Length: 231
Image (cartoon, rainbow, N blue to C red):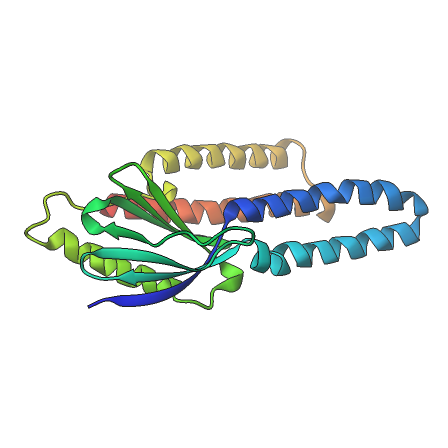
């Protein structure tokens, strides 16, 4: 039985290009208005706010967005372009059989969720979903996709299973190396406390700003090591 999903996807390349152009544009604006004093600084501040809104919330939905309809069945999946990227022509329908699929990897992050499909031919299909425009069937699709893969791998007629690629936070060697590096940073901070001392809040705040993300990374490393051990 086939199922259809409407997926809203974004181009990371287009998104990064818009962000880079936005950053670069700040330089001439600053050079022009900063010498004007307080009024110039207010203008720069307004420009930064408007630029951030355009770059992260408005322009991506017009320039970096496309919509696909993905049809899944027991034999494979099909991609039909509903709306192409701005400035591009719709791509022709693409059909991929399950026996053409070598491996897949699903990565979920704060900004983008990505499903990466690696075909036996060497081709790679990447589907990026942006967190700020997530009112679609992406989550339903990935859940159903994993079930289809699981059933395919368990079929008696399957000679080569479709592998699930490990995420970087599931790589034991990488996690241990990062853990050692963070351990050295902690030791350096402790030695700084011992030999230099911190006499006021202005010295403590930067240290806390550094320690917060480090503790979060350590938690991720522990979870990753536990997952790698279980597998």
